[in-house]
Figure 1 (cartoon, helix red, strand yellow):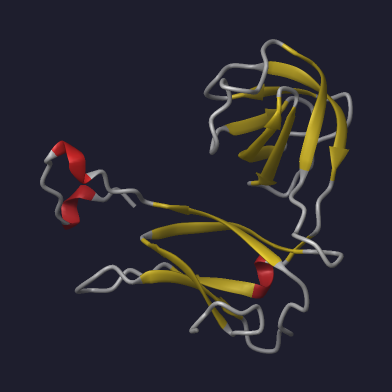
Figure 2 (figure 1 turned 180 degrees about the horizontal axis):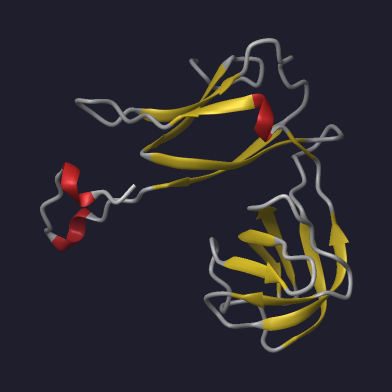
Length: 171
């Protein structure tokens, strides 16, 4: 089917209203792609049931800014960087929503991020919202192993009964 194979030039994200791509990770082995992660040596509270997926993490000395992708346990998170800086072992960090502060004990750098090999088609059209997709740039080889794509998209909650128009969007 269209846009579901890694060798396709266009890969469908199967969601409309994509606002940005945070990472396109290609596995370095035969399994699933590994995202960057860290385990803490100390923290003010457990990550489980306190950290929100999508929450920002700020490194105090490196200046690294990242977004939580998965909570792997009470003291371990998967994340994706939002800037060009990287966390350091023994660095203090702050979670921006939960307010948790802690010290990084170990870091897994994760697999290759192919983000710069793709451009985003958000799916925004003049008359409708299509599924978003990433499009491999010309001259870039197709991935050869499994990939994992991390992205932001708008969510529409129609249960509240509000009217939404083109003026409802901020982005």
